[in-house]
Length: 160
View (spheres, rainbow, N blue to C red):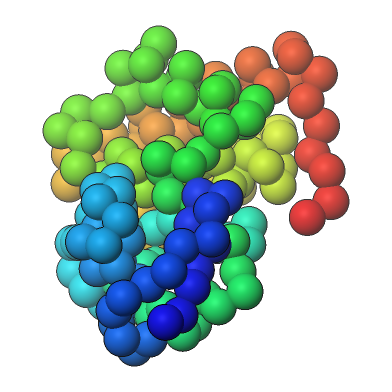
């Protein structure tokens, strides 16, 4: 049986190694933050963090992530995650919420790599996450708010 490192735990997978990781995460481990949207890596609803990068779980298999660390929205923690979660709540960023786990995850990944992003940095980092409610300006504002919180708290990006 293949194993994956999911949210800091080594987990045995009963599915075939060619099974899309999205289905393994949702069906075997009941982590429903990553969403099925398009199945082609276009909408970004299934974005999670894999070894510090944005990865579309619908396009990657269990075999693709052997030896890598997968972090879903449910496993995001630490000062960056706290700042982003707080910003989303304080600024009421989400509308319907469908895309928000992936939006939040992408924002966390961005801020772990760039604690003071410009609008262009944010647009580039978030371009693969579609929001059907078009809350892009609120998402950008939430990321700037989280970045300001991190700056006030003395957070500095460490090498990945």
